[in-house]
Image (cartoon, rainbow, N blue to C red; front, side, top):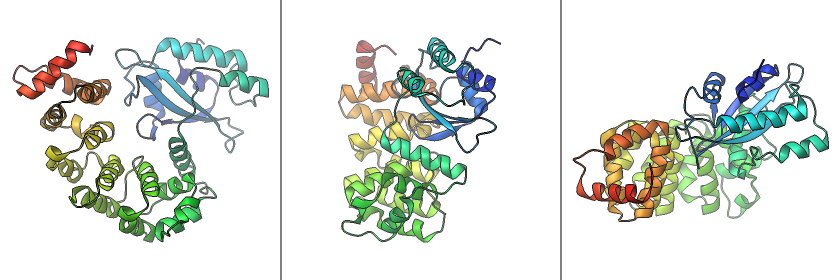
Length: 342
């Protein structure tokens, strides 16, 4: 059997496996969808920096408690499809080292050789923490040793206690939040008052999932509160990424679009793009506001990002190529196509 892509390699090894996306938001990808992505039957849905970013968790039938993990990144072609040659090169490297016995233990020399592959990467600490929290929760394993201290500090914050919390503990707590638990209520009550580093870390954990309704409602109130510090409103917007398609969420930021800061405009594209893909009028209002910033670099960066995403690419192109665009948006688009290829 000729192995032509990564999914076929995993299947041929008779390994069981799970796939997580590590691009924009850490989230599972169905094995069937992953196989279609690897076979170039569908574009990779969450491109970041023109690459696909995966965590591949696999194990042999006799080793379910000892999984192997590859953090892999592959370039995308101009259609957003996983680069076939890159997959072939990685497969050749793996087969040369391991044959098809992927779950056999590596020697130190083999480990060193594999780590030299340009397709392996080390995720940022927050992404690793989010991934491990989701994986252990999926397998119903106990959280990390940092869980109890993080839970206690998030429930009853102290002046300096946040400095002792492990980042993994925060992600473990957020991943395991029960909808009406005292922990969820405490985070909702204290979120706006957490020290900035702690609030940022909690936000990073929240944006990789769907906050329980009680907490989501509080975050929406903070997002709409004009007297709240700008950093708190921005973190509330980020933390609601998993609720991007909830009407109350996109209506909240849409109502404040004319007053949106540059940072808020960036977060909307980076984390709330499903709401932009869902409505052409909303996408137009958003891009109008970006154009009004009179910042060509900002407009170019956000438009390029929306053109990368399969879910927003067609809608964005259809909108921007209209003959009846408002003048400010038309001028920004003409300047963009004059200096960038789409």
